[in-house]
Amino acid sequence: MNAFLAANFFIKILRENIKSFIKVGVLGIIVGLIVSYLLPVEYSSEAIILPARHFSVSKMLIEPNVGNQEDYLEIGDEDDLEKLLQIIYSDDLKIQLANELNLWKRWKIENKNYKFYYLKGKWDHYINIYRTNYGSVRIKVYDRHPDTAAILANTMLDLIDTIQKKMAKQRIQTALNIVEQEYNNTILRINEMEDSLKTLREMGIYDYKEQVKAFSKEYAKAIAKNDIKEKENLEKLFIQLQKYGGAYQTWSENLRKYRAKFAVIKAKYDQMLIDAQYVLPLKYVVQSAIPDNKKARPQYLLIVLICFLSSEILLFTYYIVQSKSNLL
Image 1 (tube, helix red, strand yellow):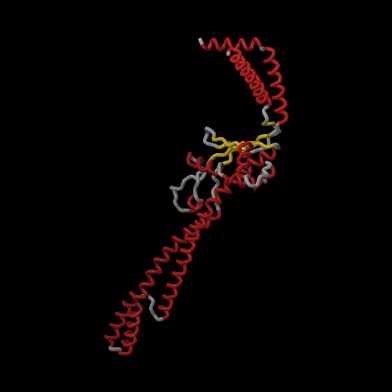
Image 2 (cartoon, rainbow, N blue to C red):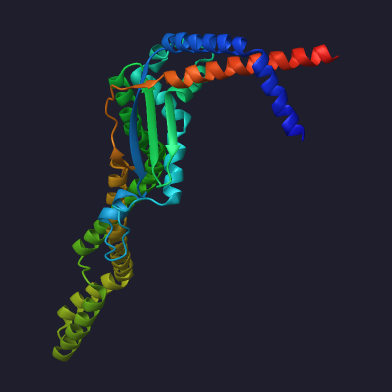
């Protein structure tokens, strides 16, 4: 019943003031046309990307792990999409894009104290980022020139990998420094042990166990022949073996272990060098941005419709207030 009375009330207002509504409606349309033509024309350009799986280059392409590697050509999952979006939404991307294309001047951001605040406001106006139902990201950029809109969108795509590399650089460099130090220490230690063994070889110590066996045989022969001079020479050699043989065994065993360690650390060092130079992209570019000469904004019909409806609603409100005032 209340709805019926309200409808009758609105119809009554409309009938009694139909001429006013027509005049205000026409005025609203005229204002909408003026506003829409005063607004600057903007063109849009759009790029679409998909997330890629995120792995280190060495782990994916170099490490000998046949049959167990992940497919580096595989499309990323939900987690990879979230990581990609975090970079796209990051303030670093906004600032780098602004510096790269001098958006400070292009978007007329003159306030130096609050320039980042105004940059984010302009960003929300000119750049729209959508997460689609297909697991992709759509980047839509507006500008007063179609070519510039495309340049903005494509530069954003390039900066995604630049920021990713910057993020990974410090971590990779720290890890590389650790591995490089261990690599150099291993080489230094191997050289020290080889020098020590070389000194022992110059003293006649070659292989402790084999030399002891050979000494025993030769010493037995010398006793059997009663060769006193040979016995004295062999005894001198045995004293040398007793004195330095243990050291030779220790250095030799340690050298074997360090050579095995060197093979492992050398492979790891080579992998880290590759990781420090190359980073796999975080994205697949499904569609690069191209200039579109069709005007995207303002939408004249929408602006005219909003002005028309706004003027009619305001007039309705005026008559409703006036009616209530008369009743009082």
